[in-house]
Image (cartoon, rainbow, N blue to C red; front, side):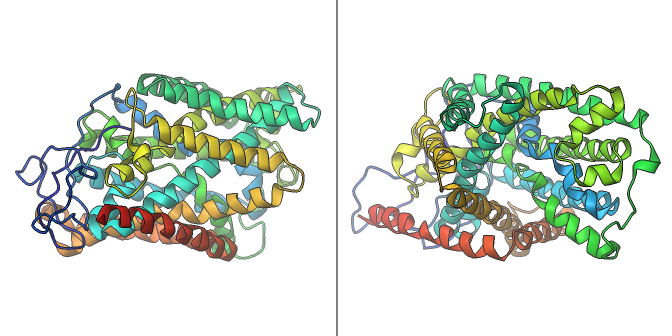
Length: 491
C-alpha cells in the first residue's frame, strides 16, 4: 500500500537470493525498488535474482500507530467465525479449550517470528518480502499469489456470511436480487474507505474493532457471573480419548488465527515498524485469544451442553440464558455485522498489499504498484471486483458448488505464506548471517522459528486432502503469470 524502496538494481548480480546489508548500510540504498526503465546492455544485464530490500519511508498517506496496527491484527483475526466456534467444538467437550490453548501458543510464536522478520526488513508485503529475500523471486511470487487468492476469496465468503446476519435485522425474504445487492454493498463500503486513503482505513478499523469487542467482552466477562458447571459437557465428550478429541477440535480451530500477519503485511504503513509490527502482532493475537477463550468458556457455562451441540446461534443462546427474553439474536446479529464489516475493511487493505510489493519488484503487473493517498488503488479495485464476481456466482443458480470449492482452496493457500515466512526465518538462523541474526538470542529464536514452522505445517495438514490437492493446482496456475512477468523482465 505504500512505496517499497530498496537498493538500486546492480549492474551485475548472481542469480538467486542475496543477503542485503543491514539497514542503513551502503548496500541498503534508497532508490525505489521495481523494474527499471533502462535498456539492458551487454555490460548491464537485467538482474534475475531478488533486489535487496531496505527500509520503507512513507511517501503518501498517514501511517498507523501501534493502536491502529493492533486493531488491524485483532480485527482481521476475528471476523464472523467467533460466533459459531462454541457450537462447532462443543461435541468434543471441554478438551477443546486445551486445543485452543495449544493453538494460541503456536499463533503467538508465529506473531513473534513475523515481528523479527519485519524488524530486519520493514517493507510492505510481509510474507512475500521474506520469502523472496531468502529464497528468490519464484518463492516470493508463490507467496504473493497465494496470499492474494486467499484475501479476495475470503472477502467474498465474509460478505456472503454477513448477508445471513443482515437477514435477521432486515428480512430479505430469500430474494436473490436483494441478497446480491446487500452482499455487494457490504463489500464495497469498506473498499470505499480504503480508496479514501490510509487515514480512513485506520479510523474505520479502530472504531469497528472497539464496537465489536465491547459486546463480545460483555458477553464473555458477563457470562462468567452466570457460569454453571452443570452446563459443561464431559472433558472428552466425543469418546475418542483426550488426544483424539483435542486433535479433532484443533482441526476446526486451526484457522481461527488467520490474520496474525496483518501488521507485517502492512509494515511499510506502520510507524516505527521495526518495533511496532512485532508488538502489534503479539498484542493483537493475544487480545483475540482472550476474547476467543473467554467467549467460549462463557458460552460453555451458560448454555446446556446438549442444547449447545445443536445450536445455530450459540452467542445468542448465551445472551438469552443470561438476561432472558429473545433479543439475543438481534444483539448478536448487530455485533456480527460490525465484526464482519471491520474484517472486510482490514482484509481489503491486505488484498492489495502483496500484489503491490510484488509489482514493485516486477513480479506482478505494474498497475498493481500504483497508489493514491498511500493506497494501491488498482489492487483494491481488482480484488473487490473479483470478490464481487465470486459473490454473484455464489447466489447464482447452480453455482454454489464452485463458490464452496474456492473457499475450500483458501484453507490451503492461506498457509503457504506462513510456511515460507517461517522457513525464511530458519534459513537466516541456519545460515548465521551476522546482519540477520542476533547471536545472543540464537537458541530462543531457533525455538520460536521451529515452533512457528510446526504450527504452519499443522495448518497445512489441517486443510485436508481435497483443499491441498485443489489448492496446489490453483497455486501452480499462477506459474503462467510468473513466466509472463519473468519473460518481460528479461526483454
